[in-house]
Length: 412
Image (cartoon, rainbow, N blue to C red; front, side, top):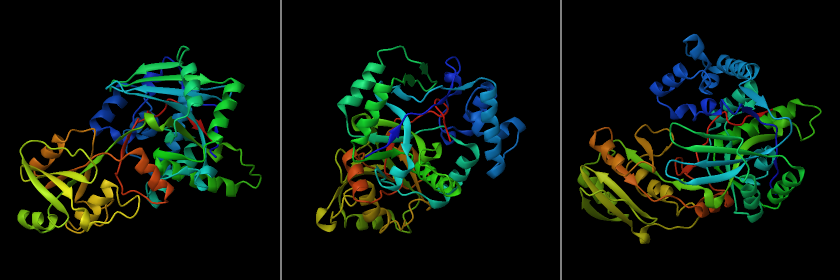
């Protein structure tokens, strides 16, 4: 039973939204960030990077306070305006490849997160949760929705399609060639219908944004404990989310790049690998696996196909059958000695939107010694792992859509 509610978003004015909307701060290179900050005074990057105004790097609580100041300045200047009444926001993205994502921006319940009505499939890092919680407590808003997914629902699909028959409140195309559309849903009857449909769902799933949702939950606990008159309907009880049906979700793999062979020669490494896999040298022709439990490998100028020897690996849980876990348990940990996938500096990740040739380039450059490719996880695998209370290894999935910050803002 999911409690998904409308809210009064703070939004850019229609003429400014294309200038305000920004990708996540970390997704830009330093040069890209500097160019946008220099050339676009309306970019949301000015809010999250307030030190630019002073030509100084600022961190910690001082930065959080300045973020809030920049945000308030955007409101005072009329760049941001808050809606008068709670709404759901139908949101559509058409990416540069022509793929569509259709969903609803709304507020999801922190209590649902606690009670596992919002299910998780990825571990989070405790200190990151606390740091971002402290940030949220100071700035007082969510600017990038958590991506949630739900089973396809014909009633919600009909509501979305009906909303999209009207002129969009926002329609803009980014320099990345993604086109974004937003419609307001504010009629009481439709709002009630959306709420009821989500209430009838036993669970929904986090697709992307585990740290953001975990931090929002910590914030909820802090503010609840500090409020002697807590009622449960305060704004801090919820966090902004973008909810899309499972069929709209696009899951890519994260490929692995490794520095060194843990002291092994190429021949010694291949012999150890033979314990778990049937190995075929594919030569110079790029090879990409086509089914789960199969991997591609690029080593010393050649591509290899790796086929799991199922007699030496038991799949007993939903997690065991996940390729990212399988690669960890059969190669990365026992052969290459990588125990900590988050912090070991020998391993890096390349999302599957990049061509398999990117693995070749990274290894040929000498920065990495070996690269591994796999097929993407499925939504069913992700849900089964979450339902079983298990957690995927880090960087198991690269999920689309990727959302822009600053298009809708949830205040608490």
